[in-house]
Length: 137
Image (cartoon, rainbow, N blue to C red; front, side, top):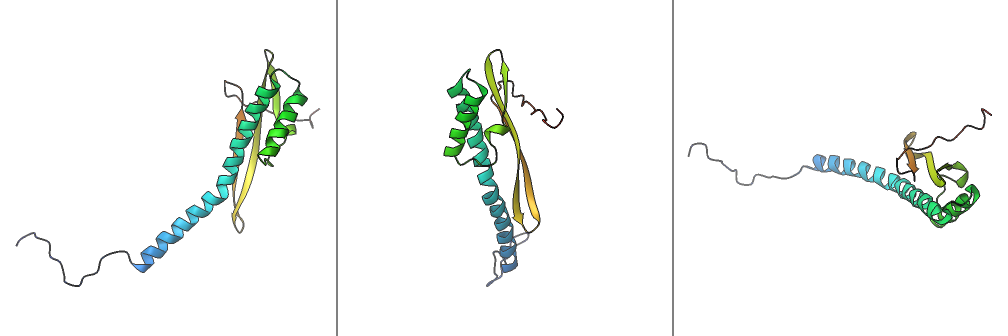
């Protein structure tokens, strides 16, 4: 039989112990990152929903009404990374647009951490307004 495959009787096949350990270490590292990062993304979605609800609730109300509505929704969803004072509220043609930007530092292991930048707006154009520095004034 030319070119045919030959099999040894009693030959073992499969994953070695060291190969299995490497795969488990890699999967554990990925799971650690996912477990630590997932709450930050859940909080980001809660902030986006809170600004959308604040805009809908307050409509053309004052800045303070928008901030109070945001604080109420953020309190329900346990948002701690950003407060109503950090929101940038602008008026374009009578309609209030709300923007935010914040950073979240997530410690992974030891002195290794992950820095995530989150931004969002209710402006249909998608432009996030910059917050004016009060130190310059």
